Amino acid sequence: MMLGVLTQLGSVTLTRLAALGRAAFFVARVLGLVVVPPLKGRLIVQQMHFIGARSVLVIALTGAFAGMVLGLQGFHVLTRFGSEALLGQFVSLTLITELGPVFSAIMVTARAGSAITAQIGIMRITEQLDAMTVMALNPLRYVAVPNVVAGTLVMPLLGAMFSVVGIWGGYVAGVLILGVNRGTYFGGIADVVDLQDVTNGVYKSLCFGLVVLLVCCFKGYHAGYGAEGVSKATTEAVVISAVLILVLDYVLNTVLL
Image (tube, rainbow, N blue to C red; front, side, top):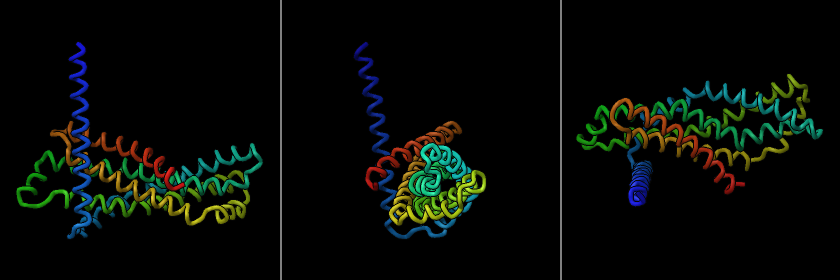
């Protein structure tokens, strides 16, 4: 019985290590192709439109309501300490350094990342990737590199949009609904937010975009056969990306702050 348990534990460990090795090899190949020309400019622009432009509405909606919730909750918390004048600082710093990069990355994962994983997975099970290999074409240059480059480039823009819309959402909740002075709200933002806060948010968005697209492309590229394999790969891509975003956010906070 003990031998069976150890055998099963060893099998699981070896399987996980093999998966990590496959992932590391995939990341190394993709990042190597990013710096080796030629890059597929047309595909990169197409994916920037798909990942970025088509995510604007969902980013704006979630940013607005996230800012309104921050404004509402922040006002009631700060009122307990007689510091409701700090509402602008609270909303802006929270959005620019934390919620903007994190929430925008999670929404992009849910909307674009899942679609990219499913698309690459379908190409895998219909043997389109194998056909590229037979024609002496590197599939990663066509299905992974454009997505990774496009996602890394557009994620800071989406994070900035989330933060700006969220600040105006906090303005609606705090100033127009709860009666905080408008000048106090925006004056506090100008006094507290500096370039370091903005650059920290940009760095986070760049890292999130790179990690999310690498995970989604990897899961789609190694999807199992059949509809079940594609659906499993898509689910795993979204879950792993969301977890890595939160873990990476903590790591980056320890480094940047």
